[in-house]
Image (cartoon, rainbow, N blue to C red):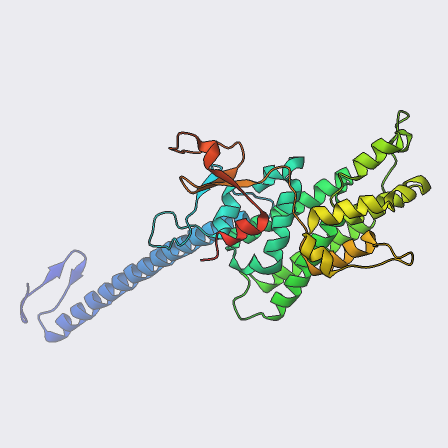
Length: 355
């Protein structure tokens, strides 16, 4: 390193042996260093900005992908096992903890609605959830609830059957949502409030579609219901478990109206749904001094729950505490698994998850 007074030379440069020359040298070198440092810092900042933008892009891309999956309301969440372990009194710390939402996701209700034996069971379960259990479902379970409901509505629109049943379900759900949406800000619903308002509009659209259904008479030239002997007609009508179905059937033809007013028919319907004690408390006499079983039935319906009847139900194995549809294989260690299974009504299913 040159000292003051020494001759310092570099290629293409010559400096005098003075302090001024050395000063100019230092100024030039420091300027070059600062320039190089500024250039390096600029490149470093540029690289960091590119890295930051790249990370932001990756995060945004993942978020868009997640939002896209979440926004696909028609996506159904399937599980390999079609059964679930439940135990009364379980907690999050114990094996077997299960919520209503988890059970709703796991038990494949989407396939169950395609089975005529299970359709009414699933619809009743949806109605009970809509009345009081909607807020206990997780976000995924609420989404699956709407997915299954949409499939139910589409099936009814296509088959033109069970229209009244689904109208009542939609009205129950809409009434519940009106109450819950008004309580916004109290964490009663999972998701954005606009999403639920959109779902309410969808429910109104479904109701309008059901109201506009025009039932077409099938092009069938064979034997009809009214062509059957009266005894067979009465036998078939006795198998209807809802009095409103009898009233609707009686409106189809004058001859059927006469049969639908049969006192014995309404008496058997009352005795099927209600106990003798309940019936004695709601006695109604007609103008002729006889029991008016038809009026008694509709009064009893307003006072007491009707007996529920389903072709197929969910079953709980009392040995291994596994919940599944009838006929579904599950890992049971009992010698005779069928003897350990007990059928559950929709309300029993809801009560399993009230810890």
